[in-house]
Every structure is written in structure tokens, then in C-alpha cells.
Length: 131
Image (cartoon, rainbow, N blue to C red; front, side):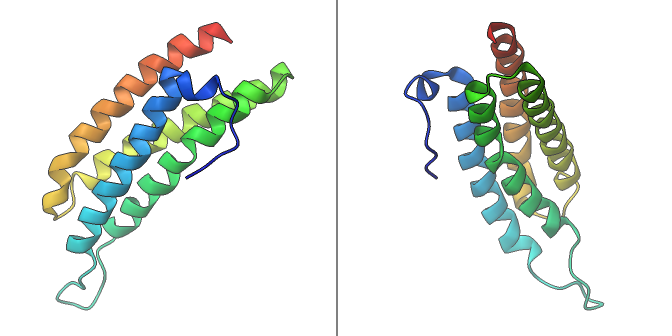
């Protein structure tokens, strides 16, 4: 994943944590998909498989939102990007909790991702004070 980013961004702890979350969520999703891809006895699919895709999509949008906030000069637009980042983090956390109820061995790794999201939120609060 390559974004056009200013040189100082790669040094930001929040950006580094976002990249860690992307890698972790993709790994967990791949692991979960192997267990959830099979059809149920009645021929229906496991609805948790969609949440595994959601965590990848949402985590992949964290870094671009951070870039948007850093590059935006208008405070109103910056605020909208910050709200979007907060929304993504909240949805990602809740989808992790939903996936923990799935019938997969991969659910054991979701508390690790939720822990990383908690660290991300702390970094996010500190980072927002510097803007």
C-alpha cells in the first residue's frame, strides 16, 4: 500500500500504528475467511464473513484519513476528516467484537486487534491536540 505522503508523516506514531493495524487486520481476516468461507448445513453462508471484510476495509482507510487531516489547511475540512477517522475506529472496534462471536479459531486474535485499536485511540487523542 503506497500513499503519496509527506516525509514527516511516516514518523508520526499514529500513522505507524495505523499501518500496523492494516497489516494485523488483513492477517486476521485471511485466517477468519478460511474458517468462515464454508456453507452452513442448510446451504446458507456465515454472516460473519462480511465483518471480516469490513475490518480490512475500515483499517485500510485509517492511514488515508490521517494523511487528509495532515494535509488539510481548512479547519472545517480537517474536522470532518477527524470525525471520519473517529467513526472508522469505532466501527472497526465494534466489528472486532462481532467477529469474536464467530465460529472460527481466528477469533482468538481479535482481542489483539482491539488492543491495538485502544492504543491507536490514545495516540489519536494526543495527535489531535497537536493539530
